Length: 398
Image 1 (cartoon, rainbow, N blue to C red):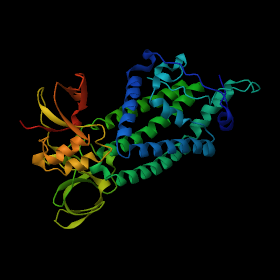
Image 2 (image 1 turned 60 degrees about the horizontal axis):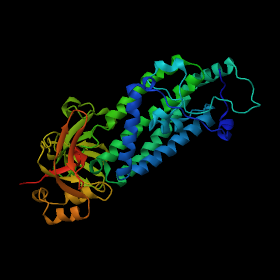
Image 3 (image 1 turned 90 degrees about the vertical axis):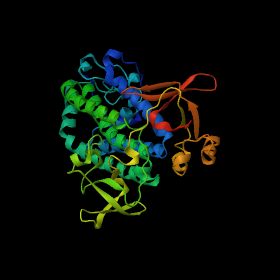
Image 4 (image 1 turned 180 degrees about the vertical axis):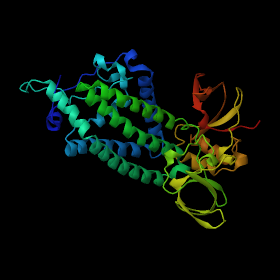
């Protein structure tokens, strides 16, 4: 058994960790999924307007949580290391043989390894004490994490509002939703690491089961990222809104609003003033006040919710280029008349093509599988490149 070092000795340590790859059998499907998920999430964050600001806030609060846990509860949980490892789980050190009961295990820091030559000999008692300490202070730890997580989300919501809100910037809203879950994932991974290194495999396995559910939730958060379209609201539109005291994560977008009347309602917009919406109540009176964060979209049947056209090889389509999201491409596209959006020769469309925000090309391959929905084209060198279904703007009329 190894003993748990104090936070100060850990912070002052000059030792360098050596990471060893973990074999695929140990990582399992979930470990590889997490690595790929966070790698792609990072790419999406970098391309989304406001995404980097959200990531900065996240990293700031992950660091704050770790320091507060050490200061208040005297328990060192390395959440920052867990967060970094999400992007590359195969680069974490090999785990102890007894840890194979969890799908993939984080062995990330040197918190429980003595690297001072004059340190006292490790004992079983020290490790057991560390585990007892963690369990005894679990309630306090949870409160600290929740408090700082809530503060982080409030800061993120300010950024979301700054960049148009959930309606105008649904991709940023999805990123924030995923970050809410990532706080829990990193907290659980840090606990698993702490417990396993202290020799408690039973408790760490129990937390791992909860952690794996959160991992799947994060994967689900991003399912609509590439297909989610900005929604423009106007007075007279029917909208789905959160009831008082309800949270966005309680609403299931794959279910109809009428099946979730305890969570959401559907009424017409009476007035829009910046971020504030006034809705008509059941008696037709403007008594319902909501912010844009409480508006979840339009019910089925609205233009934005109707099914996309089916694409086939040979169709010429207009698609988003890499700078579309970062240079207000959606705002420019929305300003173009509907009847001109399928004509690459229309003046406003040509301006966006010249600015390299959009382009048109002939479809060479279509992949409409359950997981990956992609359209492929040939570039100038004749090589295939792909765009997601959500990046296709229109079919060019022949």
